[in-house]
View 1 (cartoon, rainbow, N blue to C red):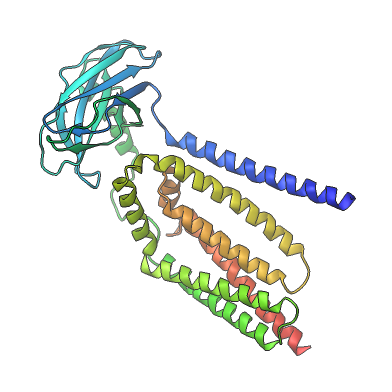
View 2: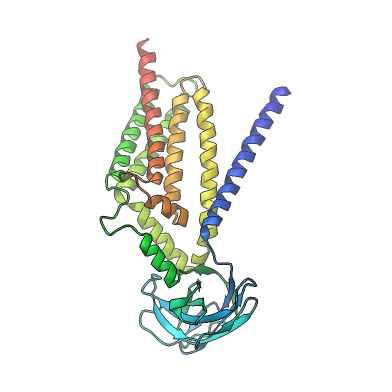
Length: 364
């Protein structure tokens, strides 16, 4: 009875720690999102060429007396190639708590797939003196023959740099020179480490078969071979650059299905789950280190492979915090790639330790 109670307490504590890691990661990522809270924007679900478009903006109560302006801009199917599309008229006086309605004519422009509103505040009404700026989410532009709903719905807004903020950013930027980032040797080095680990996993599986399959030996051999397959697949991904193409394909699919704007909560959920899983892997690793017996090396290898896979998956998910971490580099090595390499190294060490241990036991 006492052992059952202790086991329950340990599991409850582990579950609470994983939930706390998930929540803390979610909150930290939300804080880095930097969404403007000084305005709320409503817009229709689509814009039709040749038809009026209404955008409604409500300012927060803390906004001082100023002037507000709203312009409509365009983007191509890749959400690039930005350009001016239409104006709603000159700037107008504004103050906190007010709601403003802006009407646009949507002209036909070449290579225009999306439209988005740019809202800014300025004491003089000019963009050069803007103190705050934000953009609304992209809405698709359809032909004049289509009739999208004109009903307004609350839309996401994103912080946009003012001219003064852009000047400060450029002044803090490093002088022009060779761009620093992850070195080209990272992926081949990881691929070599993973392939070596996969070969050792196969060797461990073969030796399990040669040992005559003791109790549980069939399951352990299957585990070694499964880990070998995962590590070999990881090496292929590293060398072929499949991860980048997969991310691009997923982005295009999300845009085609109209769920691109939902990517951020999904990304945060995936990254928070990965953080909780990483904590769970760490706890399992600490437990396996203290666990006696020949299966400890198998645990090490499995945890290393899982850590490498989880961090690699998170690195594919484009999020501001991850992008910043990937842009940092020390001698060409980013923190994300360092963690991925650590996972691969732990997996390789586990396979090597298992193989050497079996050789020593056979010699004795």
